[in-house]
Image (cartoon, rainbow, N blue to C red):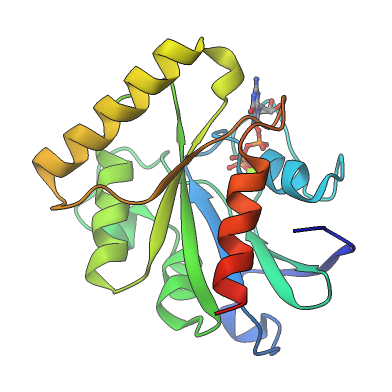
Length: 198
Ligand code: GTP
Ligand code: MG
């Protein structure tokens, strides 16, 4: 898919104030610093449409970007800093939970995982919570430029294998990407295009 336009629309913490357009929407979620904002920039080939930083916690709001005047990419704040808590509700910021619970336009979430990591509790819990709420999602492994091809394959396979042992009957759909090299760009955009055309 060609990206002809990508424009920032609005930032907020209140899902009721998100754009009213009834067009397909895809949201990027995951631990702080995993590369959500960088991936959005890579997909739309704009250096700093979404704000990025080497320090975790850069994105603090729900950010809507309208693509090709016909669908949204949504950059969300990261999670993973709460120390001890019992429920997803208290571990993930309230407005993020509300976003997923209320946003009818959301077609699919992308849960971003650093390809170097093994499954961490907070990510697995978040994916389980999405599953329980009937919210479709894919995994996007990020920062593939940090590993050699053999290690990428091994890590991703191990990750998906562990997920199916612990939580899922079938491994979720997944992508392998690098915002530095552009790897995985066509895969993610084709996936979105296919859904948009359904
Ligand atoms: P928060 O908004 O804080 O939740 O973080 P984020 O998930 O949006 O991460 P962000 O895109 O701001 O990137 C965090 C850091 O990782 C930055 O220093 C990026 O340059 C770096 N980074 C992101 N993607 C990649 C990648 O694919 N490869 C490499 N090598 N670095 C990356
Ligand atoms: Mg960010």
